[in-house]
Length: 381
Image 1: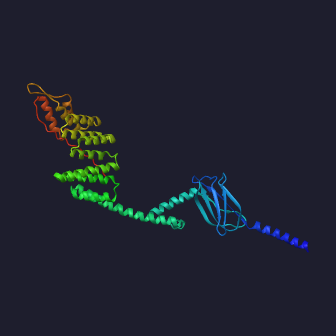
Image 2: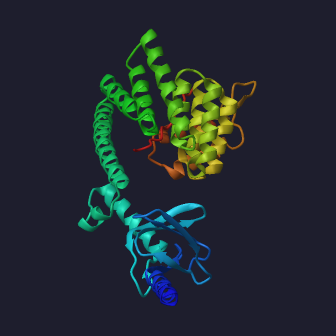
């Protein structure tokens, strides 16, 4: 009787052991990195959902992993790389027999996420992409769509205000131009071109005002050129136009510094900037440094006809008079006027150049009023 009982218990133990072994399962898979190659030492975390249980395993040098002895159940399999969860597969149900395959491909995941991001930004999601989105991604997409609509509305408002300002500026309606560009600057204060054109509008306004109103408009123009240069200090045109405004405010030293910067930033146009510097110096009665500026303009651009003419005029200021009242022209003056006529025989200074040459030939002193004018450089949006 006892023997039969022991035998039954033994059989029961054997049966129980066999049943226990039969109820285990396994999960296996491969892990590839963003470069498409097998990813070694990535951590795979296996968490049972129906009953509490956590298991971990690392990938080998081939990017493979395998975990046996898992109770039959439903699991979440998470891939961790460098301490961060990068992907997961939810509701993995294990079964008897062959391991349940759960693979991770980070290269494909990255491509899919990038495509999803582009689709979310444009609002052109496919049905499959929409299903793949997590609640967090969906919320992010909705925020992005809202921000995109707000940005589009802002851009339209900005463009409308800017275009209004440009049309008014071109029509020399300076008050309206100031209003349009001011509004554009309020919408987006990071647009350097807005501040530069607002400065142009104020300088134009100063030209039609007098007294305190003229001074106030001129100062606002200088202020807005500074704003444009703070945002884009490498723009030579802004330095040039700022210098012209400074000269109108009779700040010649500052104007000279700005034109020198313009020439350094934009060597191909250095001739124009040095010419402008010379013109400013001439108009402020500084003939000697003006001559040096025109000479630099010629060195930068040997075919700059107006610079040759103005340099000749500056040289003529050094002419000596003999006791009998005859003029001794300085060296290089005649060559400068002849060079101008060679380059621009029908130019604005052609008659004046011919007159200067005739004066030198006859040695009769004549008085000449220099029409030097700075040349503005425009910067389009």
